[in-house]
Amino acid sequence: MPRPRLQDVAEHAGVSLATASRVLNGSARQPGPDLVAKVRASADALGYVVNAQAQALARSRTGLLGLVVQDISDPYFSSIAAGAQVAAREHGLQLLLASTDRDPAVELEAVAALVAHRADAIVVVGTRRDGPEDDALDAALTRYRDSGGHAVLVGQPLGDVRTVRPPNAAGGEALAVDLLRLGLRWFVVLGRWETWATPRERSEAFTRAVAAGGGVVEVVPVAEFSRDGGYGAAAAVSDLVERSHGERLCVFATSDVMAIGLMAGLRERGVRVPDDVLVAGFDDIPTLRDHVPALTTVRVPLEEMGRRAVLAAVAELDGEELVAPDGGLTAEVVLRESTGAAVVA
Image (cartoon, rainbow, N blue to C red):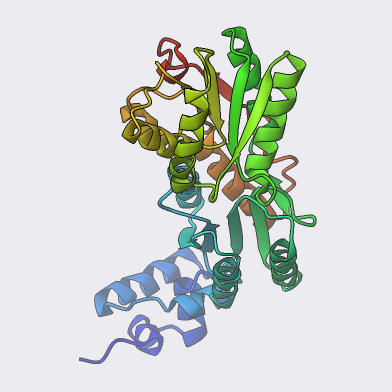
Protein backbone atom coordinates (compact mmCIF):
# COMPACT_ATOMS: atom_id res chain seq x y z
CA MET A 1 0.00 0.00 0.00
CA PRO A 2 1.45 3.41 -0.94
CA ARG A 3 2.27 5.83 1.85
CA PRO A 4 -0.60 8.31 2.43
CA ARG A 5 0.00 11.82 1.13
CA LEU A 6 -1.04 15.16 2.59
CA GLN A 7 -3.52 15.39 -0.31
CA ASP A 8 -5.14 12.13 0.88
CA VAL A 9 -5.58 13.57 4.37
CA ALA A 10 -7.14 16.75 2.98
CA GLU A 11 -9.62 14.76 0.88
CA HIS A 12 -10.46 12.43 3.79
CA ALA A 13 -11.13 15.42 6.07
CA GLY A 14 -12.96 17.37 3.39
CA VAL A 15 -10.67 20.40 3.63
CA SER A 16 -8.29 22.17 1.28
CA LEU A 17 -4.68 21.08 0.93
CA ALA A 18 -3.56 24.41 2.41
CA THR A 19 -5.72 23.87 5.52
CA ALA A 20 -4.38 20.36 6.04
CA SER A 21 -0.82 21.69 5.67
CA ARG A 22 -1.37 24.47 8.22
CA VAL A 23 -2.67 21.97 10.78
CA LEU A 24 -0.12 19.19 10.36
CA ASN A 25 2.98 21.25 9.61
CA GLY A 26 2.61 23.52 12.61
CA SER A 27 1.91 26.82 10.92
CA ALA A 28 1.12 29.77 13.17
CA ARG A 29 -2.01 30.37 11.06
CA GLN A 30 -4.25 27.64 12.43
CA PRO A 31 -7.93 27.14 11.49
CA GLY A 32 -10.65 26.71 14.11
CA PRO A 33 -10.41 23.90 16.68
CA ASP A 34 -13.10 21.78 14.97
CA LEU A 35 -11.18 21.75 11.69
CA VAL A 36 -7.92 21.05 13.50
CA ALA A 37 -9.47 18.04 15.24
CA LYS A 38 -10.99 16.81 11.97
CA VAL A 39 -7.68 16.98 10.06
CA ARG A 40 -5.73 15.27 12.82
CA ALA A 41 -8.32 12.51 13.08
CA SER A 42 -8.04 11.89 9.33
CA ALA A 43 -4.23 11.83 9.56
CA ASP A 44 -4.42 9.23 12.35
CA ALA A 45 -6.94 7.15 10.45
CA LEU A 46 -4.78 7.07 7.32
CA GLY A 47 -1.48 6.64 9.16
CA TYR A 48 -0.06 9.84 7.70
CA VAL A 49 3.49 10.73 8.78
CA VAL A 50 4.37 14.43 8.85
CA ASN A 51 7.07 15.58 6.43
CA ALA A 52 9.75 17.18 8.63
CA GLN A 53 11.00 19.44 5.84
CA ALA A 54 7.53 20.75 5.12
CA GLN A 55 6.97 21.26 8.84
CA ALA A 56 10.20 23.25 9.12
CA LEU A 57 9.13 25.45 6.21
CA ALA A 58 5.75 26.16 7.80
CA ARG A 59 7.27 26.99 11.18
CA SER A 60 10.42 28.70 9.85
CA ARG A 61 12.26 26.36 12.23
CA THR A 62 13.51 22.78 12.09
CA GLY A 63 13.44 22.10 15.83
CA LEU A 64 17.06 20.88 15.57
CA LEU A 65 19.84 22.00 17.91
CA GLY A 66 23.42 21.10 16.97
CA LEU A 67 25.91 20.27 19.74
CA VAL A 68 29.59 19.98 18.80
CA VAL A 69 31.98 18.66 21.47
CA GLN A 70 35.67 17.87 21.29
CA ASP A 71 35.55 14.37 22.82
CA ILE A 72 32.30 12.72 23.90
CA SER A 73 34.25 9.88 25.58
CA ASP A 74 35.68 12.45 28.03
CA PRO A 75 33.32 12.76 31.03
CA TYR A 76 33.85 16.53 30.97
CA PHE A 77 32.11 16.79 27.60
CA SER A 78 29.56 14.05 28.20
CA SER A 79 28.42 15.82 31.38
CA ILE A 80 27.99 19.10 29.51
CA ALA A 81 26.11 17.21 26.78
CA ALA A 82 23.80 15.66 29.37
CA GLY A 83 22.82 19.10 30.67
CA ALA A 84 22.30 20.36 27.13
CA GLN A 85 20.11 17.36 26.26
CA VAL A 86 17.79 17.95 29.22
CA ALA A 87 17.37 21.64 28.39
CA ALA A 88 16.83 20.92 24.69
CA ARG A 89 14.12 18.39 25.50
CA GLU A 90 12.41 20.85 27.84
CA HIS A 91 12.19 23.35 24.98
CA GLY A 92 11.01 20.90 22.34
CA LEU A 93 14.32 20.73 20.48
CA GLN A 94 15.95 17.62 19.05
CA LEU A 95 19.65 17.53 19.80
CA LEU A 96 22.11 16.46 17.09
CA LEU A 97 25.52 15.55 18.56
CA ALA A 98 28.91 15.63 16.84
CA SER A 99 32.23 14.67 18.49
CA THR A 100 35.41 15.93 16.81
CA ASP A 101 38.24 14.04 18.57
CA ARG A 102 39.81 17.47 19.18
CA ASP A 103 40.48 17.87 15.45
CA PRO A 104 39.82 21.48 14.27
CA ALA A 105 39.12 20.30 10.72
CA VAL A 106 36.48 17.85 11.96
CA GLU A 107 35.00 20.61 14.12
CA LEU A 108 34.54 22.78 11.04
CA GLU A 109 33.03 19.85 9.11
CA ALA A 110 30.56 19.25 11.94
CA VAL A 111 29.46 22.88 11.97
CA ALA A 112 29.05 22.83 8.17
CA ALA A 113 26.95 19.66 8.34
CA LEU A 114 24.66 21.14 10.99
CA VAL A 115 24.26 24.30 8.93
CA ALA A 116 23.36 22.14 5.90
CA HIS A 117 20.71 20.38 7.99
CA ARG A 118 19.29 23.81 8.87
CA ALA A 119 19.80 23.49 12.61
CA ASP A 120 18.06 26.35 14.40
CA ALA A 121 21.09 26.86 16.64
CA ILE A 122 24.56 25.38 17.13
CA VAL A 123 26.40 25.03 20.46
CA VAL A 124 30.16 24.44 20.19
CA VAL A 125 31.85 23.10 23.34
CA GLY A 126 35.59 23.05 23.90
CA THR A 127 38.75 24.96 24.63
CA ARG A 128 39.98 27.44 22.04
CA ARG A 129 43.45 27.32 20.48
CA ASP A 130 44.31 30.98 19.81
CA GLY A 131 45.36 30.37 16.21
CA PRO A 132 44.15 29.96 12.62
CA GLU A 133 41.82 27.14 13.67
CA ASP A 134 39.90 29.56 15.87
CA ASP A 135 39.80 32.11 13.04
CA ALA A 136 38.26 29.51 10.71
CA LEU A 137 35.60 28.55 13.26
CA ASP A 138 34.83 32.21 13.94
CA ALA A 139 34.35 32.81 10.20
CA ALA A 140 32.08 29.75 9.85
CA LEU A 141 29.88 30.79 12.78
CA THR A 142 29.74 34.37 11.48
CA ARG A 143 28.46 33.17 8.09
CA TYR A 144 25.91 30.95 9.81
CA ARG A 145 24.65 33.78 12.00
CA ASP A 146 24.54 36.20 9.08
CA SER A 147 22.21 33.75 7.33
CA GLY A 148 19.83 33.71 10.31
CA GLY A 149 21.33 30.97 12.48
CA HIS A 150 22.17 31.23 16.17
CA ALA A 151 25.37 30.11 17.89
CA VAL A 152 26.60 29.70 21.46
CA LEU A 153 30.04 28.67 22.73
CA VAL A 154 31.06 26.84 25.89
CA GLY A 155 34.68 27.72 26.57
CA GLN A 156 36.46 30.88 25.46
CA PRO A 157 34.80 33.64 23.38
CA LEU A 158 35.07 34.07 19.62
CA GLY A 159 33.89 37.34 18.12
CA ASP A 160 30.60 38.42 19.65
CA VAL A 161 29.10 34.92 20.01
CA ARG A 162 27.43 34.39 23.35
CA THR A 163 29.70 32.29 25.53
CA VAL A 164 29.36 30.19 28.67
CA ARG A 165 32.81 30.52 30.24
CA PRO A 166 33.91 27.87 32.75
CA PRO A 167 35.33 29.36 35.98
CA ASN A 168 38.83 28.16 35.10
CA ALA A 169 40.92 30.96 36.59
CA ALA A 170 38.83 31.24 39.75
CA GLY A 171 39.09 27.49 40.27
CA GLY A 172 42.83 27.36 39.71
CA GLU A 173 43.41 30.16 42.21
CA ALA A 174 41.11 28.66 44.84
CA LEU A 175 42.81 25.26 44.55
CA ALA A 176 46.25 26.80 45.10
CA VAL A 177 45.06 28.71 48.15
CA ASP A 178 43.55 25.60 49.76
CA LEU A 179 46.63 23.46 49.06
CA LEU A 180 48.88 26.14 50.55
CA ARG A 181 46.70 26.07 53.66
CA LEU A 182 47.55 22.37 53.98
CA GLY A 183 51.18 23.44 54.37
CA LEU A 184 52.28 22.46 50.87
CA ARG A 185 54.95 24.57 49.18
CA TRP A 186 56.36 22.48 46.31
CA PHE A 187 54.15 21.96 43.27
CA VAL A 188 54.34 20.55 39.76
CA VAL A 189 51.86 21.63 37.10
CA LEU A 190 50.95 19.40 34.17
CA GLY A 191 49.57 21.24 31.18
CA ARG A 192 49.89 22.25 27.57
CA TRP A 193 48.82 25.83 28.05
CA GLU A 194 50.90 27.21 25.19
CA THR A 195 48.32 25.82 22.74
CA TRP A 196 45.07 25.19 24.62
CA ALA A 197 43.30 28.01 26.43
CA THR A 198 41.58 25.96 29.16
CA PRO A 199 44.69 24.39 30.76
CA ARG A 200 46.49 27.71 30.30
CA GLU A 201 43.82 29.62 32.22
CA ARG A 202 43.81 27.06 35.01
CA SER A 203 47.56 26.65 35.34
CA GLU A 204 48.42 30.34 35.14
CA ALA A 205 45.92 31.24 37.88
CA PHE A 206 47.21 28.36 40.01
CA THR A 207 50.85 29.38 39.50
CA ARG A 208 50.19 33.04 40.37
CA ALA A 209 48.41 32.07 43.60
CA VAL A 210 51.16 29.64 44.63
CA ALA A 211 53.83 32.30 44.04
CA ALA A 212 51.81 34.84 46.04
CA GLY A 213 51.64 32.33 48.91
CA GLY A 214 55.38 31.68 48.93
CA GLY A 215 55.32 28.36 47.09
CA VAL A 216 57.33 27.06 44.14
CA VAL A 217 55.94 25.64 40.90
CA GLU A 218 57.81 23.44 38.43
CA VAL A 219 56.44 22.55 35.00
CA VAL A 220 56.16 19.10 33.43
CA PRO A 221 54.92 19.49 29.84
CA VAL A 222 52.51 16.91 28.47
CA ALA A 223 51.97 15.69 24.93
CA GLU A 224 48.17 15.82 25.13
CA PHE A 225 45.49 17.52 27.21
CA SER A 226 44.01 14.09 27.99
CA ARG A 227 44.28 10.93 30.09
CA ASP A 228 47.19 9.74 27.94
CA GLY A 229 48.94 13.06 28.46
CA GLY A 230 48.82 12.55 32.22
CA TYR A 231 49.95 8.94 31.90
CA GLY A 232 52.92 10.01 29.80
CA ALA A 233 54.02 12.52 32.46
CA ALA A 234 54.37 9.82 35.13
CA ALA A 235 58.04 9.14 34.33
CA ALA A 236 59.06 12.79 34.84
CA VAL A 237 57.01 13.04 38.04
CA SER A 238 58.57 9.80 39.35
CA ASP A 239 62.04 11.27 38.83
CA LEU A 240 61.06 14.36 40.84
CA VAL A 241 59.72 12.18 43.65
CA GLU A 242 63.03 10.28 43.82
CA ARG A 243 64.88 13.59 44.22
CA SER A 244 62.41 15.03 46.76
CA HIS A 245 64.38 13.85 49.84
CA GLY A 246 61.19 13.54 51.84
CA GLU A 247 59.70 16.94 50.92
CA ARG A 248 56.03 16.68 50.00
CA LEU A 249 55.41 17.22 46.29
CA CYS A 250 51.94 18.01 44.96
CA VAL A 251 51.10 17.65 41.25
CA PHE A 252 48.31 19.71 39.74
CA ALA A 253 46.91 18.11 36.59
CA THR A 254 44.76 20.64 34.77
CA SER A 255 41.93 18.14 34.29
CA ASP A 256 40.67 15.10 36.18
CA VAL A 257 41.26 12.75 33.25
CA MET A 258 44.91 13.87 33.17
CA ALA A 259 45.18 13.27 36.92
CA ILE A 260 43.71 9.77 36.54
CA GLY A 261 46.18 8.96 33.77
CA LEU A 262 49.06 10.27 35.87
CA MET A 263 48.08 8.15 38.88
CA ALA A 264 47.85 5.06 36.67
CA GLY A 265 51.37 5.71 35.37
CA LEU A 266 52.71 6.36 38.86
CA ARG A 267 51.11 3.16 40.18
CA GLU A 268 52.92 1.13 37.51
CA ARG A 269 56.20 2.65 38.71
CA GLY A 270 55.52 1.81 42.35
CA VAL A 271 54.92 5.46 43.31
CA ARG A 272 52.04 5.70 45.78
CA VAL A 273 49.42 8.44 46.00
CA PRO A 274 49.23 10.10 48.53
CA ASP A 275 52.08 8.41 50.44
CA ASP A 276 54.86 9.36 48.00
CA VAL A 277 53.29 12.19 46.01
CA LEU A 278 50.09 14.22 46.16
CA VAL A 279 47.84 14.78 43.14
CA ALA A 280 45.01 17.23 42.37
CA GLY A 281 42.78 17.54 39.31
CA PHE A 282 40.10 19.84 37.97
CA ASP A 283 36.40 19.40 36.96
CA ASP A 284 35.03 16.79 39.44
CA ILE A 285 33.86 14.48 36.67
CA PRO A 286 31.24 11.86 37.70
CA THR A 287 33.63 8.90 37.33
CA LEU A 288 35.67 10.16 40.30
CA ARG A 289 33.06 8.62 42.61
CA ASP A 290 34.60 5.20 41.97
CA HIS A 291 38.26 6.21 41.90
CA VAL A 292 40.74 5.14 44.59
CA PRO A 293 42.35 7.09 46.10
CA ALA A 294 39.65 9.75 45.96
CA LEU A 295 40.93 12.70 43.94
CA THR A 296 41.19 16.26 45.21
CA THR A 297 39.72 18.47 42.50
CA VAL A 298 37.86 21.64 41.59
CA ARG A 299 34.14 21.06 41.13
CA VAL A 300 32.76 22.81 38.04
CA PRO A 301 28.98 22.75 37.30
CA LEU A 302 29.36 20.86 34.02
CA GLU A 303 25.72 19.92 33.42
CA GLU A 304 24.63 23.44 34.33
CA MET A 305 27.05 24.83 31.74
CA GLY A 306 25.39 22.69 29.07
CA ARG A 307 21.97 23.79 30.23
CA ARG A 308 22.97 27.47 30.20
CA ALA A 309 24.28 27.15 26.65
CA VAL A 310 20.96 25.77 25.39
CA LEU A 311 19.00 28.43 27.29
CA ALA A 312 21.14 31.10 25.61
CA ALA A 313 20.41 29.54 22.21
CA VAL A 314 16.68 29.38 22.95
CA ALA A 315 16.70 33.01 24.07
CA GLU A 316 18.28 34.05 20.76
CA LEU A 317 15.74 31.97 18.83
CA ASP A 318 12.91 33.71 20.66
CA GLY A 319 14.47 37.16 20.33
CA GLU A 320 14.92 37.52 24.07
CA GLU A 321 17.79 39.07 25.97
CA LEU A 322 19.92 36.78 28.11
CA VAL A 323 22.79 38.70 29.63
CA ALA A 324 25.92 36.80 30.75
CA PRO A 325 24.81 33.16 30.35
CA ASP A 326 27.73 32.16 32.60
CA GLY A 327 26.68 34.51 35.40
CA GLY A 328 26.86 32.87 38.81
CA LEU A 329 28.88 29.83 37.72
CA THR A 330 31.29 28.99 40.52
CA ALA A 331 34.21 26.65 41.14
CA GLU A 332 34.42 24.74 44.42
CA VAL A 333 37.56 23.06 45.76
CA VAL A 334 36.94 19.52 47.02
CA LEU A 335 39.78 18.17 49.19
CA ARG A 336 40.10 14.39 49.15
CA GLU A 337 42.55 11.58 49.88
CA SER A 338 44.92 12.21 46.96
CA THR A 339 46.27 15.29 48.77
CA GLY A 340 46.21 13.68 52.18
CA ALA A 341 42.85 15.15 53.16
CA ALA A 342 39.81 13.30 54.43
CA VAL A 343 37.10 12.73 51.85
CA VAL A 344 34.59 15.56 52.30
CA ALA A 345 32.52 15.20 49.11
